[in-house]
Image 1 (spheres, rainbow, N blue to C red):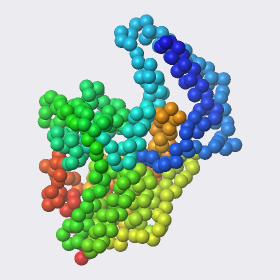
Image 2: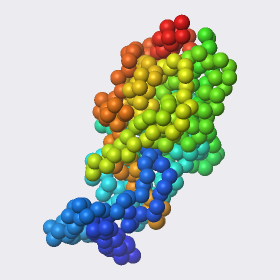
Image 3: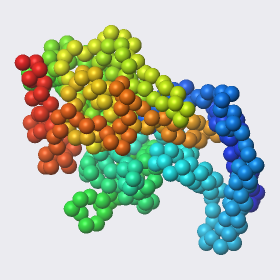
Image 4: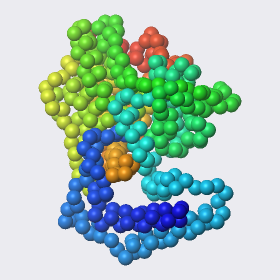
Length: 424
């Protein structure tokens, strides 16, 4: 049975490869109109190839030979596994491994193949509501190390004792370093009330720490806000999800009603999120003008503009650090270009590329890097990040704290000082 199944995989793989080359990936995919994660998001519909591109998608005899060689090599590997491999091979896992390896061969840490379950989890996370351990995480693109950025104070990870800076080494005994971040996150999600075992490495601890965490429904607190002294508003934005736009608008409206004279927006440790969300939030801050643009491999430029005259009219500061990535960098970079805010903190992560998610009819999907994004002044910050106008490191004693008291947050206090000068 396995032999017939694998032969089908090989036949399908070869056919798919040829179809992608001849017809373009759009013919294999279902339409997907909604914006997707910077896990950034852009439209997943592909435009038809123009006359000028026809030579690029024709199939040469050399290409056909290469695909046939791939199939022969996979058949040889399958025979070897049948003869020598100790354990049984699950057909579905075997197929998924082929597809994952195909995308992994690009050598791009941001491109990945999602199984049907992984894709569902991905779409769920972008909505801002999910069942899991309740923590934001980030992954180093070079080392593959996954780190806890912030456990939510209302979530089970925080109650179990997980702290910022903890390195996730295993989930349910499986090593996760180097595994795609979205896949690891999906492993930590599940049904409410079920348990997941998470092993972490913590600075100062000789042995890994083991946590058994009971999953619960999490409504990501993407926005927290308050009015500080001297009528300075403070908005903490942890992600750019679908729910963030309405939460941000509500926070600004409330602060304005209370007589806000200046505003600090904190995107430290914000890993990014939806392109559409950051564009809408910038639209709330800036008048009609260019907010961000992208360019793909064909030099096609797509521009995003603010659409109305609504504008925040008080002085602003934005807090960033090395974990501020992607959509957070668009947010900070755009405001910096227009001198609409003073950027305070440390240099941001440096992710200036856009991924788009392409779903298949069987429920699986592929995320591919498709373009670079640029701030209004034409800056692409991939690999370099946003350099703040005012550079200041967070005090070391505060770097491991989940909740930093305002009085002890030296970066926030620096931003407040800069704003006080502007409001007299």
